[in-house]
Structure formats: C-alpha cells, structure tokens
Length: 351
Image 1 (tube, rainbow, N blue to C red):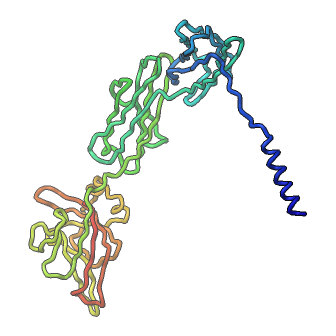
Image 2 (image 1 turned 180 degrees about the vertical axis):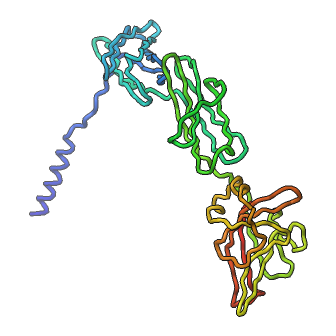
Image 3 (image 1 turned 30 degrees about the horizontal axis):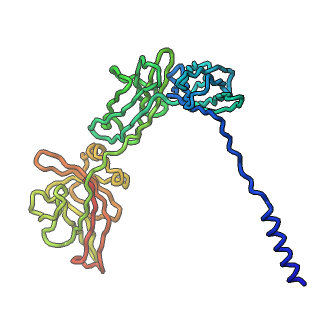
C-alpha cells in the first residue's frame, strides 16, 4: 500500500511541474534609443558638456535634470541624431574632487516615454609622477601635468617643505602646466619626508595636489663576506673584495690573536692603517653612503683585540688619495675546543 501511495505522489509532482508555464521576461522594442557621453569635468573647469547620440535619428529633443539639484533643461537633437548641452558650475553642483552628480535624461517616442541616467564625477586636474629619491647627488624629477578638460591654465606654482608640520616655501622659477621640479636627495637627511605641493590656476579657480616623498638611504651597492683565520700572512682587501697577503699594499684587515693564560681572544687589525669606528646594528642595516662617509674618524682605531657576533664597524681605507668607505658586521667567532689552528671569524660588509 505504501509503495502505491509513493508512486501516486511522485506522479502528482511530475504532473504539477509539467503544467507550470515558463515565465519569460518581456522584451520591449522602444523603436528608439540614445546614448550619453561627456568629455568630463575637473575642479579647474567651470562647465561640462553632455553629448547625445540618437542613432535611429527619430528624436527631436531629450530632457535633462540634475536628480540631486534643481537644474532642468532640454537638449535639441539635430537631423543627424546628435545634440549637446553645456552646464555651468551652478547647474552641476560639483565643488570638490570626487563629488558626483546624477543626471536623468527623458525622451518620448511614439507616445512611449523612456529614461536614461548618467553620473558625472569631478576629477583631479593635476596628475603627478613622483620619483624614489635616495640621499645622493643625483638629480631626480617629479613630473606633473595640470590638465582641466576645457579651462585654460593661467598660473602654476610649486612649493616644498620638509616634514608635515613645516611651512611651504615657493620653488624659484617659472613652471608650465606640464612640467617638472628637480629634487636632489643629498640636500636632505635620512628620515626626512619631502612634501611637494603643485598648484594650478584657471581663471578664478585654484587646485592643488600634495605629494609626500620619503628620502631613502643611498645604500652601498655591493655586499661581500670573508673569513679570517690563522693561516700565515692571510689578509683581505675591502675594495677589491679579495684575499691578499699582509704585505700587499691593499691589505685592509687580518686576524688578530690575543693570548692569555688558558686561552685567547680573536679580533682583527689592519696591516695598512685602515681605520675602524665602532658602529651600531642600524649602521649596517641602513648602510647609507653619505652617513658612513660623514663618520668622525678622529678617534678611530686600527685594531680590535676581541670581537663578538653582531659587532659592527665602519671603516675607511685609502687607495692613493681616494678614500673608500664601508660598514662591516661580525657574523661568527669560532674557537673549536680552543684550538687556534681551527679558529676563525667571519665578516660580512657593504661597500
């Protein structure tokens, strides 16, 4: 009996389902259509243009209304199906970058009304391409372009300041709407943030764009590492990144052993008066060339008796009359079972 009931129930579901009519969304052929476009609008412009394209060429006019404002008007459509209208600032109601206004466009064809919508957004008239600036004598450039849609740029000014709480000062010179401003990283300190303010004027309107540029360290381009051990006459050349002998004129550093009762310390010394100044971990991490070269070597040493892993030293070595700078960090101090012949230190450096 239960089996018969189940079969009847399934048959009923199938019957009801098959009797349901498929719902099809109706498609209306309006017999006409139009498309809206605009060249755009920036905060330096004082008007915006809306263009209408009626491809079927069967409309004589289109009504326009600012849905968020009070403006209403009519756009006449020519025989070729095109029409346009220009609205001023008061009609648009756009007073800041990113502000938007939604417009409704109404048309009627053969007694059938239909509407289309278009949203206009106020764009930033100033675009900026900012460089990465390092602390070097290299000249970098911040490029800018002040480009309203229809208005003519009548004035350009560039200002700079260091630090957000400082006061802007004008950059000397005359600037065009599409121009650049020079930036030399060596004029600033590590940690500085340079702010560049580009100001454009078009008639009675003014717009500006601020750009923040963090001054980056001019890090040494080269990194190397080496080992100093008790091998006779072994030394190392910082500039050439190579092992040399202690008698070589380019020998900058060699292992130094200080013995005492029951043991010994490992350090380093210079065969050719390379100068060393104790530094900090940040000196090695940042390794800014200008900061390293500005180190005070008045109290520098030419040898260190005992070093530990993590010790950092700034060095200066001469090649003829030219000074070479770098920064090194001790990465290992090994004294296996206190055997000097098996002992060594390893050093990594930037130069």
